[in-house]
Image 1 (cartoon, one colour):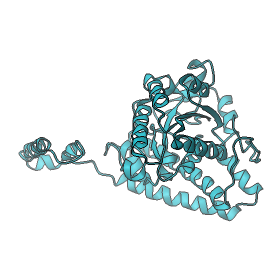
Image 2 (cartoon, one colour):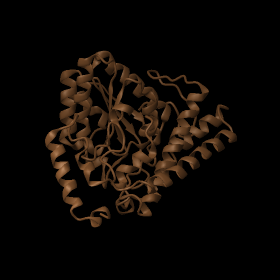
Image 3 (cartoon, helix red, strand yellow):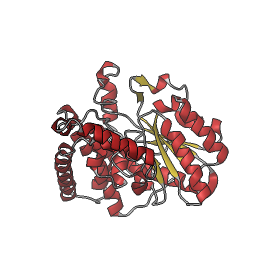
Image 4 (cartoon, helix red, strand yellow):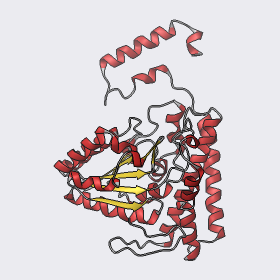
Length: 354
């Protein structure tokens, strides 16, 4: 397993992967992990207050996500599942837009092409095929970029993911499959899904597989950067298993205490990616108390804006059903929209109130 930072925050060397960042770049990794965690906490609170219908926590997985996101180049494209909130922040998504999906007022909330970050995929594993097809198109266009396909350990049991592996390998698609192995597919442990480490599956499909400490943000950044370059250079796909842990529930509708014990949670909490990076920054003299206070202030400002912004999100009008059906205007869609609006208008004031 590739590791550059021990759980205690001590920097170690690896024979195949190295990382030499500026002080600002090291600090940015910590900042983005902290912001991702605060987003997670605020979204969970908003769900408990009835402001959003559901939330999918990423607590404990910030190291994998932020490390991978910082490895992306401008030409690269991300296909997330539904838990890559930290990556979304790094790609410039407004956190209010991110939560609009969970408030039920939009199908997505952001422009995938603008951010090079595709809308969330709720169907488990489907994004792996989407990512592979998009990567094949990028290769034909000669874009010079690669695709990062994000998935979890549970999705590797899905047929779509294995089909994507086959297509990517046979056609040499410039795609990196980034698997956040958080040990649990809802209530099913990874030990009940595979008898061998997940990264070994790649060899059976004909491309390289790597295993990285998913709670080590530095290792994740280094490994993903190399993998993206490998794929973009026309060498075919790469599979990365980032070994991490979901400290929270699968979703806010889940009760993890029913299927796992506290000792396991405590053991993984001791490997926390944010505490690890904080210890590294302090040990190297790259940050002081003033810096961490500054990050905490950024968290507070983001949280306040998020709370106000989400509560202000209004339900969409019924005519929005007809938006984005086709790439451009379509006469039949326009006709159906006009018919619906005329029908609703026939109810007078009652239609205006829902």
